[in-house]
Image (cartoon, rainbow, N blue to C red; front, side, top):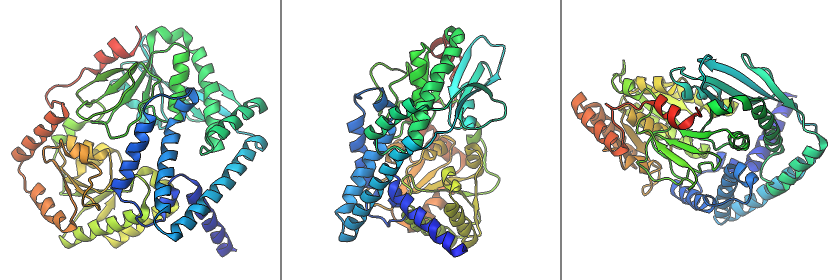
Length: 484
């Protein structure tokens, strides 16, 4: 019975990876280089960065971006071999069957009841209010650093959450389900669960902002990055209700191919050192500081032990390729006598049992490896330098905290973090030969404080950020982001 259940689980997993966009990359060996995939991402970005047909096209733009990347990657893979053509055909059939079943699911299944809940925090006596939606509650704290304002956190949820009170709820009726079915026909690559939740969020956010109209003249609406479906719906309905809307992109520099939302008045950036695309009707505010990361404090600290940091994971879930790179790097660290390596997996991976099992086995195989799952600031405080092999925002944050970065690239002619490494003032380097890893580590760890500080200051200058000058976030909020 146990073997039968395992067999069924494997069939479900096989079906899932062929239905989810880019899911097939989890089990495929490297069929496209990182450079080729990046070029596909750039093509899709150029296609989508302009106008949209209607509000729904904007709400689901991120889904379409992933769908188009998946489509082009899969079409490229189909040309590689007969086996890939067969796999391409199987994926298309699986997805057709899944789409048909999902359409029936919209008509036949009863969606759950969705709740809009609110929590007040910060300075509850303040007359200025920030209204925040985030799909990760701990991330919303960045908007109210000093608890200066009264903060309203709102969430769409299916269950009770401690500290949150109910604003309103909804269960989708048959007429609304038909509207969901129409959206499924327009966007067949989006699952019914997502469509149900987005449709429910439109109803709930609209009602919620109607209940908050009395504070509209003393409030500002905030979203972090604002690229998800619900974040865009949050901004869209807030605008319909007349609230001032703001999107904060709290990474040190803009990563390539970012599609900022249209539905906001203000876009707040840390730096404009790297090129980006923003819509004409949006006011862009550049802080020239990162108040959302204690980078000055971390930069002034030396780790208690000389520990090597290693980012584990792949931005496209190319796990076969990732495992090859993990072992190549860890074998080299073992050969040079590394005593402590702090590995940091992507948190989303740790929700999958097979990935948890993989990392447990990795720790057993390399006794000097420890997994670090805490806050990014603690991780950056504890390491002496960082090794990466894929595109990551942690590269920027590591260098901002005066921790050097060594990128090991599997493609000799492509660096996934090229844009930020080009302005790193040699605080970050890229290598394509694993045997160069040891010498690069030795060179970085042998630098004295003065040498490292000079290099770091050059990076800050290129980033257009000063270690000595702190931004007055409250002044920016008071004057530009919150109605008075």
